Image 1 (cartoon, one colour):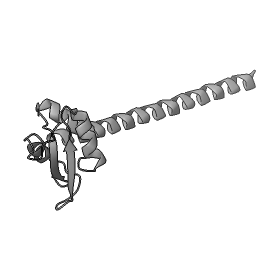
Image 2 (cartoon, rainbow, N blue to C red):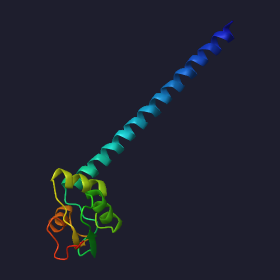
Image 3 (cartoon, helix red, strand yellow):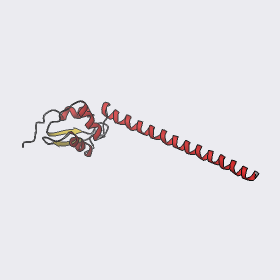
Length: 132
C-alpha cells in the first residue's frame, strides 16, 4: 500500500513539474511573439513617419518610368525592386495617408533619398511625360 501511495505522489509531482514547464515555455513563447510583433510594428511605423533611406549618401541614381494610370502599389513595387525604398507597403501607406498623386513620366531618384524626397519628385509632372 505504501509503494502505491508513493508512486501516486511521484506521478502527481512529475505531472505538476511537467505542467509548470509547459506553462513557462508557453509564456516565454507568448512574450517572444509579442516582442517580435512590437518590433515589426515599430519598424513599419518608423518607415512611414520617419526619415528612412535604403542606402547612405551618396547612393546611386535609378531611372524609373511611371505610366499613366499606374497604381501606387505598382510604383512602390518598382521602387522596391530597384532597391530605392526599404518597403513597398510602408511607401504605399504613406502615399495613401498623405494623399499623394503620382504623376506619369520618367524620373531619376536616388537610393539615398527619403520617402518624402521621392514623393517630391514623382508627384510633379515630368518633363519627359509619356505620350500615348
